[in-house]
Image (cartoon, rainbow, N blue to C red; front, side, top):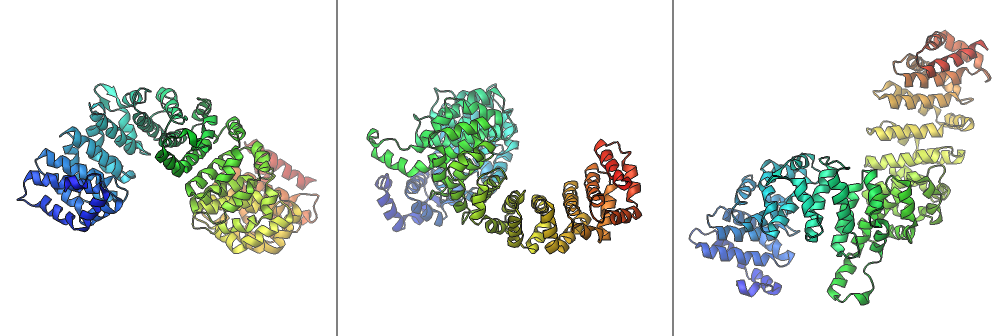
Length: 631
């Protein structure tokens, strides 16, 4: 059987159909079977697992994993190795649920104990760990069972395969995990600290796979806060190694992995972004990611060409990701990226690719570049980027929507030339729709974009926003559990209620509801920023000609303004002062009656007190207000 199935998928499938698996598992678990027979059974099962994904599913359906794990309790090393080899093959298959390794709590400690048995047990167990460690829960289980201590010394093994699998284990354990990363920094192996060992493995004379994986380990430790971003091992070793991986000479997979790891390394740090942008002409080098595969005549290996054509989209995705990280903060880098040949056309094309991952990466890249005022006014206009963006927003998955709507917020800033055409293409309805999303990030972006749209806008746009949003939805957003949503909604209200004719018009139709909302927020349990924004909205209303009356006839609101004038927080006192100043301004009709009413409420006494305030701003505002009374 063993010789019949090696390298022959058809034979493997035939044997499975004929019912060989349950029989092999039966012999493997029989007390009376000799160790040689059990070992042969494990070898044949391992060979069957090497076939198609369907083969692995058939093996899983026969409960092969518990049987093999049971086999690890044997005393015979050859049998243990055969069981581990088979387990390794099954666990590295995409159809096997990782959880199967963790269902029995005794398995992980037993595997840790087997690590010292032979170089094969070391290689297979490390490979099983690195494939089955998905997310913080698994990392914690492995960490608590001593994975770091048990695997560290394998990095100096004589076997390349063992060193490599141990390295992969560390990259998976350290990813986004401060606890593991902080521990790794201080681990000694043969008198050397782990980061120093990783740096040695980065050197150019080491195999590419090793260079890349150790660069990942150092990147993840850096992102988890265990190594500083200005440490030499990052700036002089890890970053240049990852840039090298992006060059034309490297294989497609290496270029993808190199670019994605580099994007992750430099994402939060502007200094690393600057260093990367001037290393080895990286920005120009990435442009080659879009010309892939290169001219067919040069490619002799047809199989390779077929593989590369299928995976070229992964290169584009990686390039977009890295451009997004490079351009996250620095204006000069953004300019360089945009000036790279046909860059804007490539991004615009990326927005309509069939692969969701490429679309997401292209939107991220555009979003990063859209933080530049200069580019919004030039390149973004020349390429009418808003058109494909509006298309992307029509029916995209949430993760794309979040980034695309963030970018729309930038395109709707008042100085952006794209603002007009976006409005004409039905953006108001689209954004009002986003404010009703279950996803808080989408609600924030929807309301944020509307806030930007309403800034210094004409009356018609403001009316459109209010009509599409509806007062009911506005109220819902004002009582949203997400603080960002609440703040942006208040910002929208403030922008809607600016310039007198607009204030009066809006308050004549929606005054009652808006005053209700303001009262609710001032009475609620909210932080200083929320209350300050709300008082600023009141100050805007107090600036209206007819809208003033809505405040003057509302004793409840007047008492609140008075209360905030005497508040312990200067920001709130100042905001309340603005309301009062707008209400008592002399040159406006009815100012005398308003002044009298406020005097009777004791406002003048408070103004006298505030004119002695140690805060110069508050003191000046109070003096100016008192002059209105004397004029």
